[in-house]
Length: 96
Image (cartoon, rainbow, N blue to C red; front, side):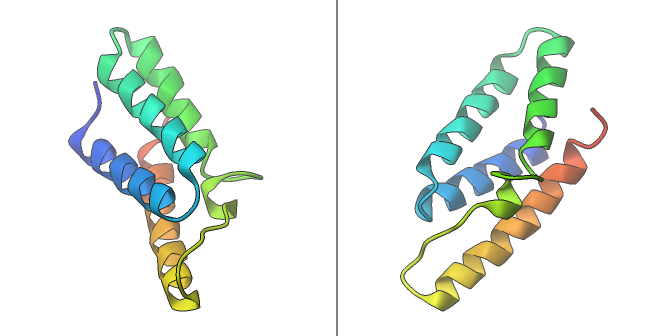
């Protein structure tokens, strides 16, 4: 019960986080992806989407996470990409 576009955004965020020092947050996202794929009720989908929406903003949210990379430029590039993906996730999960 997960849309292709949402799955694409979640996978991209997960891969980016995993590659830049946020493996535990990436694992959390993987768990939510699996929950959406296995959801058997609209309530489960709604709750999981709400969880995803809530991790974008605030302390510990996607916009707040520190990323690591081999260079300052790579870190800035990863940060820019994560911000773009977080914006997309926020919009996709907004109506819950």
